[in-house]
Amino acid sequence: MGCTSSLVVANKKEKLKHMCSQSHKANIVLTESDKHSIQKSWQLVSNNMPAVGAKIFLLIFALNPHVKKLFPFRDVPDDLCVRDKDFRGHASRFMQAVGAAVDNIDDLENAMAPLLFGLGQQHVHYQGFKPENFDIFVAAILEVLQHEMGRKLTDSMKETWRRVLEFMISKLKDGYENAMKTKVNPL
Image (tube, rainbow, N blue to C red):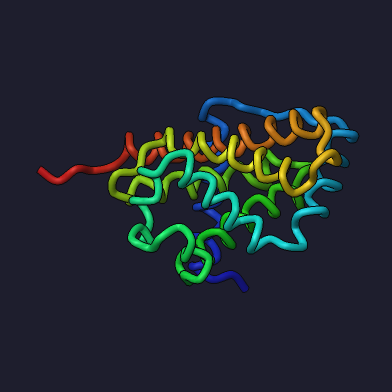
């Protein structure tokens, strides 16, 4: 027996899928070899997700210090961020999103695009956030992957990661742009 809340959730998911399909179509085509290299490289870094997530965010803050001002831990010195529960929580959630993309690498468009679109929509509520802020994540993740994996991260793997990350960022931006268009501004 279905309940009303189940129907609401199902309808919301369908609406997000439709909006994603209407957005900039940044479909991603990955070969089986590409998928394998993403999964293999993720296995090497995912066993230490909290530390890797922290490194990514600390690098982002080093590259673009203004981004840190968007977070509740804005006043925490960088060397103390790893002790801050808000920082650790955000870094952990971020890494879980990347992990979900890896887990769904066979069907990123259907499995991840609606989730990323919705997450992008949520970012309109963060004062001072700009969609360009998403872009720094690609460079930061690739840099941290290179540091963590060393020579094990081949140029081919790096390029595949870049494509996956750019796909993710495009869906986040699509969601953000959609929410900005539909946002009702008070008079």
